Amino acid sequence: MKTAYEATAAFARSMDAADPLAPFKNQFHFPQHNGQNSIYFCGNSLGLQAKTVEAAIRQELKDWQDMAVEGYFRAKHPWLYYQYNFSTALAAMMGCSEEEVTVMNTLTVNLHLILQSFYRPGKERCRIIMEAGAFPSDQYAIETLVQLHGLQPDETIVEIHPRAGEKLLRTEDILQTIREQGPSLALVLMGGINYYTGQFYDMPAITAAAHEAGAYAGWDLAHVAGNIPLELHNWDVDFAVWCSYKYLNGGPGAAGGLYVHERFGNDPAFPRLGGWWGNDEKTRFKMEKGFVPRSGAAGWQISTAQVFNMVALKASLELLHQAGIRQLRNKSIALTGYLEYLLQQLPLPCEIITPADPQQRGAQLSLFFPENGKAIHTKMMEQGIICDYREPGVIRLAPAPMYCSFTDVFRLYEVLRNFSV
Ligand SMILES: *Cc1c(COP(=O)(O)O)cnc(C)c1O
Image (cartoon, rainbow, N blue to C red):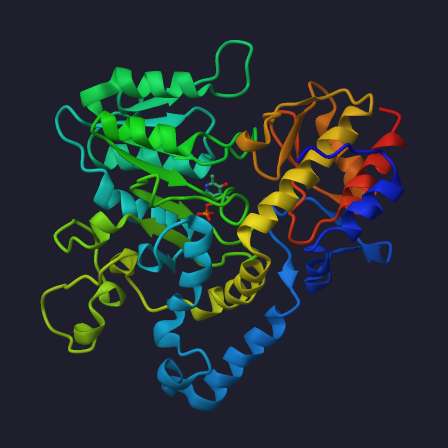
């Protein structure tokens, strides 16, 4: 569907009136600016708090007050099984079975953990392909992992760079690099969406190429979870990790997500680091010797569920699931398309570096300012437009479809129109 956009408040209002997801906006708390809701385009960094969160936290506090240890079994949402509260919603978003997904720890911790299973370098097959300019935490994780195995990062990590004069990666170059590495390649690890450019990579093609080379394919989906519907199982992705505080609105430090394909999850001999929460429930409390992993991603659980880091996520996922990831995506394509259209009407001294093709991006547009990017960002913030700035030179705008409206996007346009930049 191609909408003929118009740069008028009336057009934005008519889009909001026709939007079946519009009522969800009122279910979230917005930071205030001059007594009004800010325009919040930072959901790719920290999602907003759903209004249902406070009562949900009170419930857990109360159950702890009233029942203490009994709450593991008798709380309204028994803590012993707390991580199962997310299975249905996450499986629908990620395109996998409920067994293939679990929630625990935080993203980088889960990345380290799962790489104990999926990165066991041999003499020849030891290389890791990443995108150049990956999120720093991923870079640090891989650099130190490689060193832990006694290998040299600069000989072991193969970074794929954009071609000279370009800012995005071409799929053909990624596939070519994978083919070139061939038998020396152990792992392809990429962000599903690059945090800086907003480029959404061709996950099925890259995963297939990694497998053809005899390597695993793992994905950091921090910027994808809750943003773009996936088919992790059908694409044969080996593993994926994500955080829950961006588009999933789980709150700062919320427990992160893990996907592991069932061929590993159903193989108890597949190596991993264990703990009692990943042990078969039937024998967990027998306190016996001999780790027996639960089937599925749950077999990578280690410790007791971090209930208070999961409550807000539970409340938020209920709303996201109700909205539906495909409906969210449809709205997102239209909303981000409208943002792009409005920006193109303005004489801004910047370039939108995110792909123009909606299939190659999510909600985010990255605006590259060769100069003054930081100053322009400060001015936007002063006008109640919450967005962020990433060195070098990029203002990221991410209208999350769950709580951003076409009118929000239009208000941003009005603010920018009034800048004499
Ligand atoms: C936000 C983000 C992270 C954050 O990792 P934490 O361990 O949750 O702090 C990691 N990777 C990417 C690509 C991100 O965008």
